[in-house]
Image 1 (cartoon, helix red, strand yellow):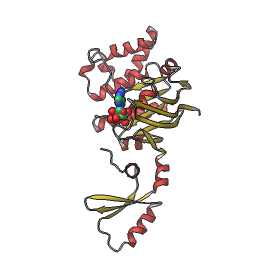
Image 2 (cartoon, protein in one colour; image 1 turned 135 degrees about the horizontal axis):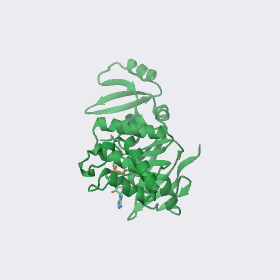
Image 3 (tube, protein in one colour; image 1 turned 120 degrees about the horizontal axis):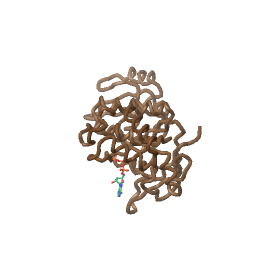
Image 4 (cartoon, protein in one colour; image 1 turned 60 degrees about the vertical axis):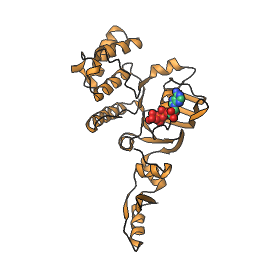
Length: 283
Ligand SMILES: Nc1ncnc2c1ncn2[C@@H]1O[C@H](COP(=O)(O)OP(=O)(O)OP(=O)(O)O)[C@@H](O)[C@H]1O
């Protein structure tokens, strides 16, 4: 399968301050890709460049085979976007919101009716179609945003922090929707600072920090590279991490220690690797 998204040496600065720094990676068609990083890492700026909302200062981006600067109009026809700020009009009803966006995408009257109906059913908002958006819960608003982004049947869906601020049950429901869309063949890029979100959803992960891509691959590749076994060592009020290629080797190390106080062994996870790479914890 070809690449749905290609970034080549992409930089973005605001007032000479680099926010995205020489970013290069590809997302294959049909892939679920997660961009993970702390607040301020440049994730939203990256998504804004990929979705034609901000121009890169340097480098080249193609989305669905089109250049995001020279062929922005084409790119927009092939992508759906769900941004962080709930950009739904609060004083319109759910249906009116969908109708408004369907018109923006030049859907015919009959297409509008069928597409709106189909996607509202999909995100389980049909019974709220006449409700004002401002009366919906946070999770419902996010589902409406997703339904709206799907109206023109895009190939690629971009989701910026899709579950931020939502309760655990609502997050799970959204995860199911995201996974299902991906299973139907949609390429997805999501940004998040939640480890569990990328662990649960994503085929491949890019870790960004300070605008730079510091790791790229699958979780199992990360674990193989950094070590699948972890010894945690309590030093004062903090934990030191010692990685070992396998859990067995981590256990062997532990067994050899005369004093095992404050030592703990377990398989490594994404969070351990993130801390190892950045020296910081998320949240
Ligand atoms: N339009 C802008 N003008 C100036 N600085 C900006 C602009 N947009 C973003 N920045 C800065 O760029 C940096 C990266 O922001 P960005 O929103 O891309 O990060 P992020 O990883 O998405 O973080 P968050 O999860 O907090 O949104 C931040 O320091 C931010 O203040």
